[in-house]
Image 1 (spheres, rainbow, N blue to C red):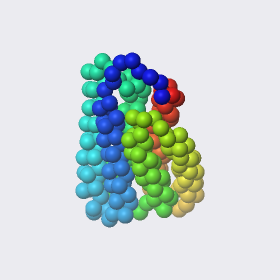
Image 2: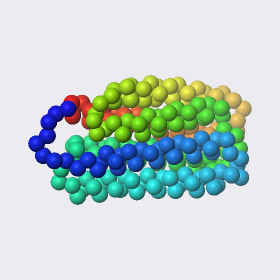
Image 3: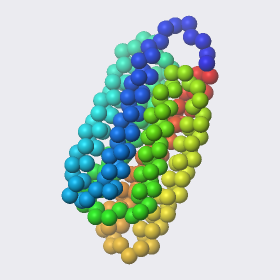
Image 4: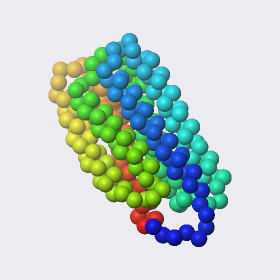
Length: 206
């Protein structure tokens, strides 16, 4: 860790931890949606929107703080990038939940549950990593594991697409499910972007 000659505001670390904690909430709601009856999904979609709004507020708090702070713990552009990447993760999970509800999908392919399991683990790892930003220690295992999970998610995504197009589903059902699957895949990509951003910050600060 390089030495600094000026004081820095460490409140950013708490804000990043708060932002990441919303991802755990979002992934938990996403998991509930998978096992819920169609009649229960409206309420869960509402909970997910609330969680997404809370995540937005956390992102805005980070942006407000960086704009009003003379000294920041690391580069401002990296703070913006990390806050935005965390926000994207939540937005994409919320979009998947909303599509499942709006399209009134009765049954999701089994592979969707595997996608969500990956996102749940990514959310847990990301939230844990945010608590270690202050020290910048023991973070390499985090971004390595996130990369492995993203590769796993890619494989699941391709298999799901093959199942959708090789099955007996109607064209409209395929289109609906494809959109959900693509939002979940995009969420996994967003989690990897968070990890890549953390890696870049750690390298700069080492």
